[in-house]
Image (tube, each protein chain N blue to C red):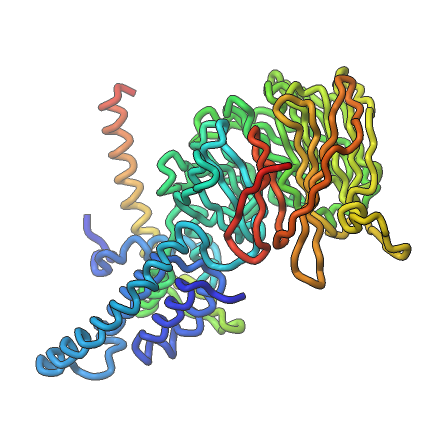
Length: 108
Length: 450
């Protein structure tokens, strides 16, 4: 399956996690890391986070907001929401196929 | 707070990013590092990030010609060789840091052992921002750190040492699989966003001795979950406690890691409810669990309690250093069998010369306590770690009393003091050991009880 995330190569996963984290409202860097860890168990390091944020920002999928002290919140853009929805649909298709095939293999 | 070697190296590496990158993200990354707990992994990650950013056309300021690249490679080699000699020992320090004494933070706040005390989970720091660490403590004198994750506290470990219950960023209970202790993964968040409004939030968690039930405690409610399959927790029962608080408002409750406990047989559950009560529940059939009785701590905030191994005695410890022992021979009608007052004063003034103007206030955190019965049930032990605000240090005092069959206490047989930095003490099950540690680090140590 191919989609808009292809260009992000190995950065695709952090990008999906970050977009998911921002889907319900703006968050600053550490809040994104904590949220991602809570909902996915993935411990993202600062280098990975800002590398992915930089790419997402250049693609126009997230936008930085005004800083609050040293913290700068980010919010997902309409384009980012669209891309995330596409990615979720793809993931759902994969999950559906995986469920079907494991159920067949295990006789469920 | 002074960062450890990994923290210092991480900050250095932020400065190694291209200038345009630093101007855009430098301050944010430093802010994240202030809240993060940098490890060797963070250092490697930031090194990779710096290299990638230098290769990124968007941040590269000058075009790199082949000749320039060759010169850069030679220069890098010339710098890298002596750096390797210097950084080798630093790297070793970071490795040790990760395996034993990670970066400084707030001290030990929660500790939970597996059934045979071979695996230990410790939590450091504040509530949801805390760091949890999994340790192999088969030999407690030579603990080995297996992993760490940001799960916060309170913390509970299943008897088989495979599942850890912590708290999520939104205040709900999270279950972590630590069966592969080097790679903890969050496997479930207990459903029930309705609980988020409860204030104060999650107060304690405990697994039943057979590991099939997880109890989660809030101010006036206890939830019993079937965690036979930890990835699919199922709510079995909600227990409501009648709360009458004379010790103060609920918002003043200091967190205590000893707010919830099953009896050894798993038939009785005791939980701190309100501010100054301990409620005893019959959980023989968790789906039909019910309240047996409520015991009080005479107006003090409950700081901890202990059930005797046979589940027939309950020792309740109040914040001002009062111990009340109740007989649960008839669990529905607890009978107070012993009252010991003034432990905090005795710990603060071991020579017996208390200050006449000393005011011990309800709700003030003047000390941390640990309380436990010995495995044979013949001795009750209380460890008082009194806080010395001015000296930023603490002093642990251990009190032990012989316990009679009827639940009365004999004279205190041991009063020992030990100078340690301030932290919450914990009494390890079975082997008469106390855990504690400096109040400003991820370190802990263990020492034998007298």
